[in-house]
Image 1 (cartoon, rainbow, N blue to C red):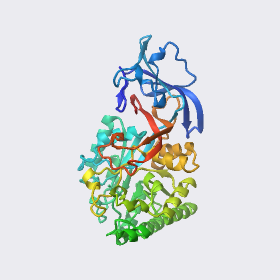
Image 2: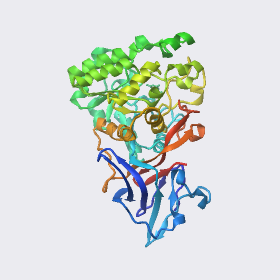
Image 3: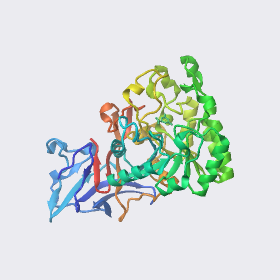
Image 4: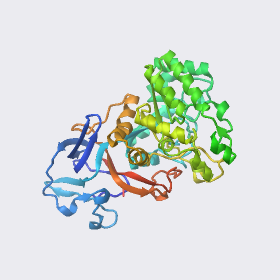
Length: 469
Ligand code: DOR
C-alpha cells in the first residue's frame, strides 16, 4: 500500500510505522526529547533510538519540508518496504515536533439538521487535519441534543469511525431556557457535559436548579454567557467601533453579569462550571478571583478572540461576526494575559461552520460564527508563540492535556502501550490560508487570507494516519 496526502489512510494490520528523529513533547511525562517512535497496530511499541537499516533510502519518505515526493508518481507518497514479511513505513521527522493530539472542547458538527454546513464525517476530517483527535460537539443542532436518541446516534457514529466524539447535551429542552432536561438519562447515554451553547439560561432561579441538579450527577456545565437584555439587537461589541460604524452594540455587561451570577451560584451549589469563549477583560478578572477563592471554575478562549479585536469590523466583513463578539484591543490583551497567567485554562475553537451565503452578506443578516478546527494550532501558535513569548510546550499542554483534565478523561502520553494519538507539527512552516486549505464543508474562517505559522504535518490516530501536504 502507499499513503496518500490530505486524506485518512488506514494502515494494514502488522504494519510497523517508525517516526524517526522527532522532537517528542509530552507534557504528562514532562518530556522534551529527540527520539524515534515505533507504532504497530495503532499502539506505541517503543521509544528510543531505533534501527531502520535495511529500509531502502528511496523508500524513506520525509514529511513537512523534508518531503521527497518527486520519487513517486501522483499522490502515492509513502511506500512500505517489505522486509521479513513485514510492512514498514518510516516517517522522517527531523525538525518536526511530535506531541499528543489535541482535544477541542467546543465544536459545532451541525448534524443533524444542517449537514450542508458540516456533518460528522466532514467534521472528523477537519479535526484530523487540525491535529485534533477528540472533540466535544455542542447541542445546538436541529433538533437540539436534548434527549438520549441523539446521544446514542452520535456515540454510534463515533464508534463506527473510531474517533473520539464526546457529545454535550443541552441543559434545557429545545435550548429554550425554560425546562430542565433529564440529566441522569443524558449522562447514562454518553453526555460528557451539559451546555445550552448558542443560548444562555436567563432565569437565575432556573440556573440555580440546573447547577444543583448537575452537581448531583457530577456533570460539568459548559456556559455560554449572555444576558439578552444587553445583546438582543447587537451586531458587534459596543464601543468605539460600533459607534463609528453605526452598528448596534453588544455591551461587555452581557457576558460579565452572567459570569458573575454563575460564579455565585456555583459557589453555593458546588456545581462544576466551565465558561466557554470568554471575551471580556472583566470576565478574566472575575474568573481569576473565583479561582483564588477556591471555586471550581475553568474557562476557555477561542483563537479568534485571542487574535482579533472589534476594529476588524471596519471592513464590514461578516466573517468577523461572532458571538460573543470580538471585543476591544484592551479585552484582547487581557485574554492573552489570561492565557499566559493560567487564569484561562484552555483554547477551544468554537468551530461554527456556516454556508457562504450566510456569511457573504451584510453584518446585520450574517450568521455568527467562524470555523476553527483546522487552524486551532496555527492560529494559537502564531499569536502566542510567534508574536508573544509563549512556550510551545505549554501550548501543547493547553491544547492536549488540560481539556482532557477538565473533562475527566485519561491523559494522553507518548509511551509504550498507549494508543497512538499523535500530532506532528512543523513549527517553522508558514502558509497563507485560502479556501484550498480546508477539509471542512464550510470555509468561514476568520483567518482566511491571513498568514499563519506552525502547521500540522500529520495526525496518527490508532491505525489511521493523515499526512498533510
Ligand atoms: O458565533 C457563534 N456561533 N457563537 C455561538 O455561540 C454559536 C455558534 C454557532 O452555532 O454558529
